[in-house]
Amino acid sequence: MLEYINKIKEISTKLLEEKKVDMIVGFRKGSLPMMNEPCFAKNTEDIQSFVWDSNCGINLANYLTNRKEKIGIVAKGCDSRNIVTHIIENKINRDQLTIIGVPCKGMIDRKMISDMFDSEITEVTENNGKITVKGNGFDKTLEKTEVLQENCAICIHRNPVIYDELVAKEVEEQKDVDRYEDVRNIEAMSPEDKWKTFDDLLKTCIRCYACRNACPLCYCPTCFVDEAKPQWVGKSQDPTDTRTFHFLRAFHCAGRCTDCGACVRACPMGINVRAFTKKLEKDCFELFNWEAGLSIEERPPLDTFKPGDPDEFIK
Image 1 (cartoon, rainbow, N blue to C red):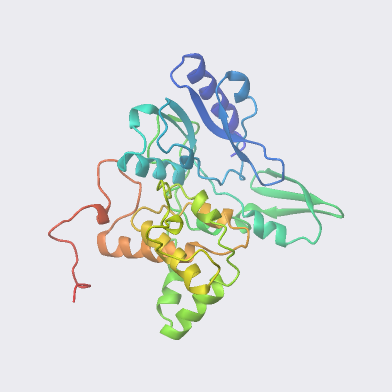
Image 2 (cartoon, rainbow, N blue to C red; image 1 turned 30 degrees about the horizontal axis):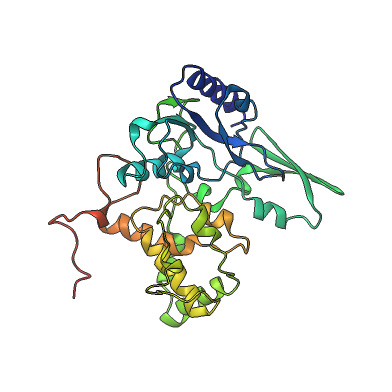
């Protein structure tokens, strides 16, 4: 994907020079390896700091909510699907956006790579599908396919679903991918084992809300966990309060989540937050044949009523 960056810079520069947008939202190199950060370019000089590689996992749609400017935005597959959701939910207008589509081959899992080494990683580079990791006393080359983020490894929508400019030919979408094996494994458990699974999953949660803050779907002016009148959930690290936060946040994402992995990527404790949202994604797909963010013409299933909707759950 390294070859994309010149085209991204070319398109971005042209958009700013022709004053078609007020700014471009892209990525620049972060201060730490594998931590590229969002960049808001308002002039052509800012464009020169843009980068694109397998460390651009942050979902840039998170920075569009309620903006008034005309914006160019660099968007991979999951970003574009969240942009669609923003448009459907009236958080941004389509005519405000110029979407620079980037066919994606997956982002690498920085936590997985960091856990492979005892010493600090000082440099990470990639070339021809290989990731080279360097640090004090080690220099190792890894296959990119072996260190992908879990959501990227099972992604079947790598190409942008909506765009105005495309920086390269579309990549081949993955086929015969089992996206819900982990969900089915939990569904097959006894109630006691399910309870233990989620207790074990959440026992390290420190209620920092990084998952919520990184999620492009969490844009409520006041989150339910911050409400005081009435107070829906306690603000401590009590297990019940922690469970309530994660389960309710997942339900708020039902029929909207694109499995971009921003929540997992942001969690400082390494919690697989996707364990909650994947179940609801699976249910929406199986009950309503619905995948979020694929069309700006169709409303999400929990936003509409159709006479043919399944009703077996009504007792």
